[in-house]
Length: 207
Image (cartoon, rainbow, N blue to C red; front, top):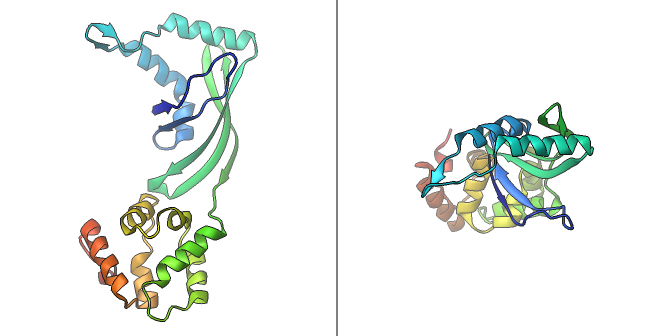
């Protein structure tokens, strides 16, 4: 796991913001946090003769002991995006110390769904590719075929970002969109050229 803390917790400020990455899910990464931390301590790599990670096993064990004795816990609240699986979840969990190990337990997990503004942005984005767009039909199609419509709300009209963003979540609605709506505008041609530069083929070439 790689984490980048935006600030450092203190006695007076116990809530911090963070970001990170893990495999296969961030929840799974947190579940292995104790074993990964012990491996991280054991490796003890150096830079210019100085340890990069000065934490010792004894210090780590003492912290866990104090956590358990004082019934302390750490709550983790995060949004997990799993590109390869097409999932996006909001999860809350708790770290506790028990029998000399740091344990992570998920308390809630809910799928993050796009709101109406994302759907409207998706329809507006796709409508530009058709000379006479049927927005009602487009709205129904978007609801049935695109999960992460907030990508359009965030990135339109940037074609590159939208293509990459959807493919990150294992979605590529554009070949089917091409078959369903027969887009015919110059904006569509421009989009297809960008799409081809990324995928080596046009969306309207996919059968």
